[in-house]
Structure formats: C-alpha cells, structure tokens
Image 1: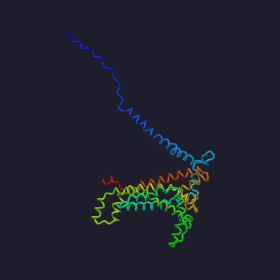
Image 2 (image 1 turned 135 degrees about the vertical axis):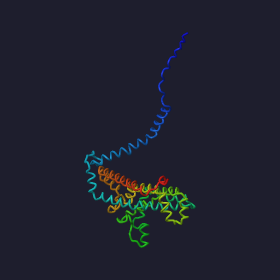
Image 3 (image 1 turned 90 degrees about the vertical axis):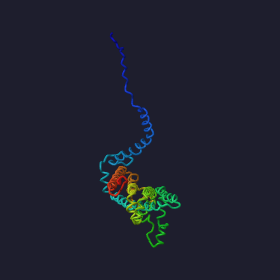
Length: 317
C-alpha cells in the first residue's frame, strides 16, 4: 500500500519585524529637538550668525551707514600701526596680570578662613559673595568713581595717613589700580569655587601630616594646593578670560572717556569707541577677532601648562 503524505502548504514568508521601540525613539528625539529649538534658534540668530557677519565685516570698510566694501587685511595692518590700539593692549595686559592674581589670592585666603567651622558661617559666606552679584552693575561703577574722586573718602584717608596722592580717578598713574581694586572686591565667585574644592580635601592627609610634625605652611603647600589644583586651574582660566573682557567698570569709572590720558583704555573700550563713536565697524570687528585669538592663545597656553602643576585624583590611582 502506497502511503501518500498530505502536502502542507508552505507558509507565506513574513516581513522582518521592525526593531522594537524605533517609533518611540523617533518620537523622543523629535520631542528633544522641539525642546532644544529655542536654544538652537537663539544660538543661530544671536551667536553664530553675528560671529559669521563680524568675520566678514573684519575684512571690509563698513561704517554702519553705507554698504560694506571689501578691503582684505587693511583693517589688521592699520590696527598694528595704530598707537592707541597698542596702548589698549598694554593697558589690558597690565590689568590682567595685576588684577587676576590678586583676586584669586584674596578669594583663596577668604575661602581658607570660611572652610573652618565657626558660628555664623552661612552669613559670612553670603556677605563675601554678595559683591560678585552687584559688582558688574553700572550703579556700583558710579559709586566706585565717587569713592576714588578728589576729596572723597579714599583721598581723605590717604591724606590722613600722610599719602598725598589725590583722587585716583583723575590721576593717570593710579586710575587703573582703581579698576583693579574693583575687580578684586568681586572675589566672591572664585571664593565659592575654592571653598567647594577645600571641602573635598581628605582630613586624613592633614592628620597624618600633623603627626609627622608638618606645620601649617607645609600642610598648605604639600597637601592643600596639590589637592585643589584642578579647582585653582579652573578659577585661573575663568578669571583670566573675564579680565580680558573688562568694559563696564572701565567705561563708567573713567566717565566714558577711558582716561585720563588713555590710562583706562582697555581693549574693549577702544573697540567700542571705534565701532560706535567713530563708526568704524569693520575695524572694530577686526579688533574683536584679534581679541578672540588672543584669548584662545592664552587658554591654549594654560591648558598646556596644567600638565605640569595640576594633579587629578585619577593620577594617584
């Protein structure tokens, strides 16, 4: 007897199923871009767009009223031959070199004091941080100018102590130090960052150093500074960049003239004068890009040098 097997019809091939969750992932990405769209729009219209436009204007003769005219590198060559531009570079460099270290030293010193447990610690931290919140305002600039004017409290105090310097604002040899004093007074922001770094130093290291007979200075030099060196590097980098960008205090304290005798002619103040007072927007755009390159160069040098003096926790493992 012949057995005949029932032929079973072959099942139709099914298409490969789409990976689970792909439509959901697309919806999540779409929602993410939707929430990011205000920032992206603002970046393109208010940051990237003006940067590209200023780069084009840097190679043109543009006075805000007529159409830009391409001049190539003329703005840059004229810039290097301009004695007032050279003066602005000198004043800005002096301000950065003097003001930034003094501000960081004061911030670190106060942070060391506030790191110790004491009564009213929260009040002292808030009080020392407050100048950083209001220091950049125009009103504080006016107050600072009145304090350092002729016959004001600083002048009278100097005279009482036997120093006949006069008001710093009207003295070309002292007015820059008035700006330095203002920026040093705003030490609250780096102080808070230093304070956070000091809280991360292991107490066991101090206890071991005390048992070995190390004094306060050796504990600070061999334990505190190496441990908070990443925080110190961050503050140095941040405050250096901020110092290059000084404008408001110099503009207000000098009564909008950046003087006397160009003594407070910081780089951004001269950029403002060229762009908006002299209507040389092409020259001002070239100055802005030179400032960007200078800050980038200083930042690169700081990042290169940090390999020699910044110690991270991962390196000790």
